[in-house]
Length: 190
Length: 190
Image (cartoon, rainbow over all chains, first blue to last red):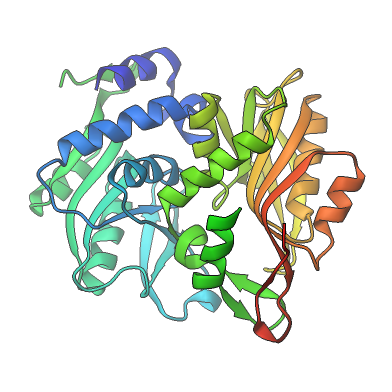
């Protein structure tokens, strides 16, 4: 998606260790007009898919997910980072974050992810795919169906996209980073 | 705002200790169409106000804030719950949460909250006003101007609204809970 790729090249900041910061327009300060355009692009890419619910995970997934839900007029559920004390009536899974080097527990209420749901998962980044794996687990526990996963930015040099696609899930990323070597942002020409 | 008040009476759930859960349409599952309508109402209520930035705090504030930012075509910044290790270039404040009975640290990058900014703060709940106080502190540290605070739901029987209005800030709440005594939701007739 050209507008996103241009913005990454303009405002993305690269740090040693394959870190890309997009704090200026996605992860801390957000550009709502770009968010809406990205949501429109997700609608287009999942046009042939039957969806009745958008799923995301706090916090950076909420803005793109609510825009997709707004366009499609569908409820949006955000999975929460939760503590054992608050897990009543919850579906629970563990996610390991490479960025933060820690495992956290995420959960979704059984009231809002149910058997028969056709779920589109939306998130900001696809890197190692650990959050994605966690979502697959939650959707499976609910006996719902994961009909697609849409990410704003995929890091192609980490292996999450490959892993998720191999499971047969329809995965879409609006911009794909080929490499961040020598702190230079190289985007895949898609 | 009638649509929100009706929805609270329909889907809000009351628990002992003055707790109102709106997990069905705001705090866990979200209704994006209602979110947009609430954002339109904020635009109306702050129509006379010069604003160049929307500020909120993760996670439940993000959805209403991005909708307001989308309508007004303004950047949206969400303050983060942060750890000491990530505080470089950050404005930092402490917020005590009565609901969770703990103090947490929230921060905003100095890059995204700056001198001269005219900030509208948007959040889901106004109860004791502690998050609001934290925001006042962050905006003051940045030498920016807090031109208004908009909340989806205010609990009138807790004293946050009174405290914030006494400082002279323009505070708007789209629905005001008069009492939750005996687990009955009583809305103020405004």
